[in-house]
Image (cartoon, rainbow over all chains, first blue to last red; front, side, top):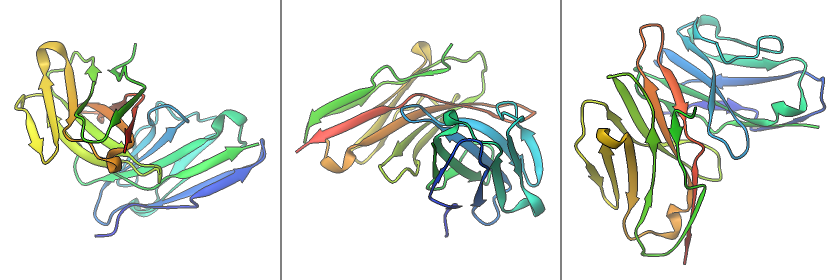
Length: 112
Length: 116
């Protein structure tokens, strides 16, 4: 079974630029999550989708972050404009049930 | 307040020693789930174990064992006879079940180094 795919694996941008990350969950997993993991910290949930609907986006900085999951499969997370403090690893996870998550390899973002 | 506390930031042990990683959680819920994940340098979080709040049985899987104690709100992870390949960052996580969507909380992680 293929795992959660994410791209790109690494991205370097300058502040105020825009960036987008892509996630392809495990086939059949209805729930998809985006996490932000700052160096030295644990992952922090940004947004949770159930199929193509948002379940929880209370931790998403909506002035600059947006996410969508069209057709209930792939998802994209966008940052516009990026700030220095957005430098982090962005992890995508999917799950077949509410209690288990399978994580992708993450996208490491560096904002200069 | 931290929902999940991993007080040990870094631990170093010599190969073949036993090591315990501590995890203390805070919740008022009666239904919740606890997890341990391993995060190697590649960055992917690898699932190790899930335990629900109604199952306090300790679990052993090879060299790994977990001690869940609701009385002390702890879910500790022990590696027996550690190996160099166990070197990684380990995260403890709590999921609080909600009708509106589960709430997820991760600890800050413990970096384990096993010295050959």
